[in-house]
Amino acid sequence: MKWYYVEQGQQTGPVSDEQLAELVRSGKINPGTLVWHEGLPEWRPYAQATGSGENFNANAGTPAAGSTSQTSEAVCAECGKIFPVDEMIRHGNARICANCKPVFMQKLAEGAQLNTGDLNYAGFWIRAGAKILDGLIIGVPMMVVYFILIFPIITSSRGSSTPPQLGALPFLLQFGMIFVNMAYQIFFLGKYGGTPGKMACKIKVVNADGGKIGYGRAAGRFFAELLSGIICYIGYIIAGFDNPQKRALHDHICNTRVIYK
Image (cartoon, rainbow, N blue to C red; front, side):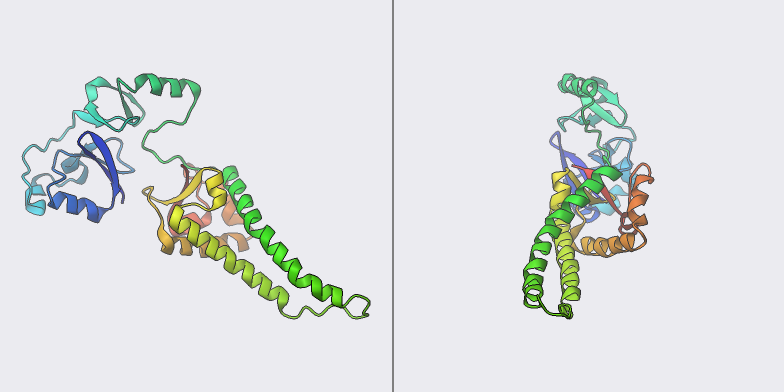
């Protein structure tokens, strides 16, 4: 799980469960520190969000005094600073400070994308467009290589009554295409969270908490995506009907999400 916390009035994170526990042990996070993760309706004190309460002192070695059951402060969804809740406005799960209110209301009036702390899931068509772009990026160079290798064989057999003998070359080229696609997907998803096609469409692949998926999960997702394709592409089509997260079959298998940046 990916956590965010407030430090000196600023939103900080994300951090993993292990990193959060270390911050608690070091005293950097106390029972009243505001924290949030996907699934929480709003920012809450650490003691309330984790249910540590009375056990905080024993578990973390930090005084439990000052822990409150209700928070009177929240983090502004626009600037990330902390303010008293009675000085902020609320829109859905987001709270906005007085300074950011004009900008937020302007975005709301214009229908612009709002930062509410929730993941903004990418739909079927934008994902299909990204997949087509990736197909062109990989496919065009591979077709050039294919014709460079095949053309001399076809030319040498011109005028002959027997068809050109290609041998195992088509199978090797097909295997090469799969290998290049695998390396392409794993590298870009593991390092950047998105292939060039996805980056061009301003979408990326994340885990359930909105964090990076890493190379291991990127590799698993590639092989799961092969399954989505070999069943008549039904695995891809699922994303068009999976509300609200728009997950394809390989996303369900690997517990990933595709979101807008």
